[in-house]
Image (cartoon, rainbow, N blue to C red):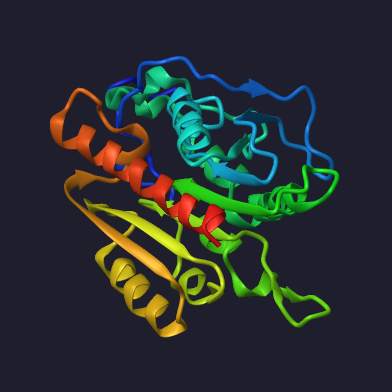
Length: 277
């Protein structure tokens, strides 16, 4: 094992900022369900009680037990009036919160993580979970949103893809999800952006400094979504870095404001598209 001060050998698509950040204070209010939803195999944290509106929260490299993820899910449940689900999409792989200390990130087995949680490995179960939420057995939610930060960012773009749409007897498109929010996405490709359905509103929360979500990808997002006719909102956060919305330091003024502004923006987006239409 590498020493704690060593720098990790980072796989493609994972930058040092994906591993930096802080653990927030507070105690999550939700519960871990005793069994997976029908049609899924994932353990899941659930918070909120709305029987009509759900939000699928796709976690980052630190996993579904990371306190920040659950605390943020609690905020979405209360403020966006939704039932929020945080499934385990890493088959139990989690990074202990104490490894957020940047000097200890060499202790994380990133090569294993990148192999076991590659896009092609996890995409099918992410799609299956979204489908389950709209199924009668999984809850029969009328509206489903998806939120993803860092690793979860590429996944919400894929959930918004036009390929999932089918037509009902009245010729109306059926969507896998009804709106998405991506914050400082990782592993995102131009093809993901180009494949978005014009019927799924997209929100992007973009810090100024982000090697994972490059200036080229930011520009491609802005230009492409306009061309596709997608209802979208792009919010720029100056002076902050990749990871600020899910692992920002609440003790730092600039990061704290970005965290609050990002949370408020996501809540407003979900309220607009999951309750307002």
